[in-house]
Image 1 (tube, rainbow, N blue to C red):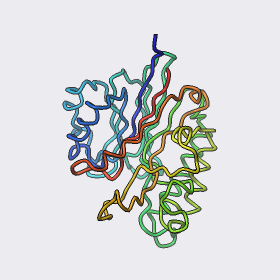
Image 2 (tube, one colour):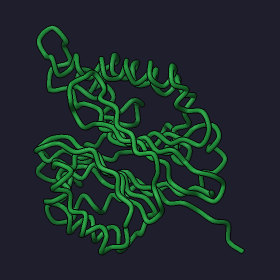
Image 3 (cartoon, rainbow, N blue to C red):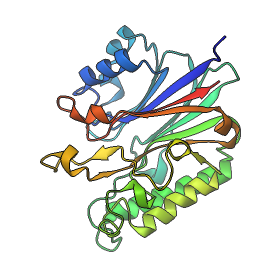
Length: 271
């Protein structure tokens, strides 16, 4: 008898209403148990709930706002204990957590959209970059003070940082580019270490191999230039480290009609 598994996807969709046809295509073809979305860009009342229900995803937790940010979790399995934290007291919809049912006991999911940080990696002239660094500091303190990674826990989403040398197309060229600067990498590493998180993607792909989840819209031919970054992450607690079964980074989704600049990332766990 095949062991029970749980497939969980994270995807920065860059407007769930605009790209609902792509979401439907993905859910029909890949059928994850749980889909965690970022940058939904709509208020809770505008979320396309009926579309997800029609696809068999009857359990939904959302944290949205008008036109910006927004995170959501849609699931075939029941969800419980939906919570939202307002990091940095900005009123931004950047976090939601839920418990999803699994055979070995519930798994807590924390779905994040970390601030992008603007264009200039200088806190004296760019308040967006300061916000990003403050957000990461608060994430670390929250993980430590709340014991967030105790038990069966996953932290995933668009963390907007490519921390490793081979998470970007050129380590040297991007050292002064927001998303790969040393200060961002240091602070995200602090977040990782605060929970003793396991980097689920690098569990499957060695650190010395290139691994991307995002390609800029600015590239005339994103596939030919392949100047990507790994901005999307899936972290699992030590209690789930032995449950990791597979990884799928759906690169082909970047070629879909009117795509997001991010692609879906899926891990499968034994439950």
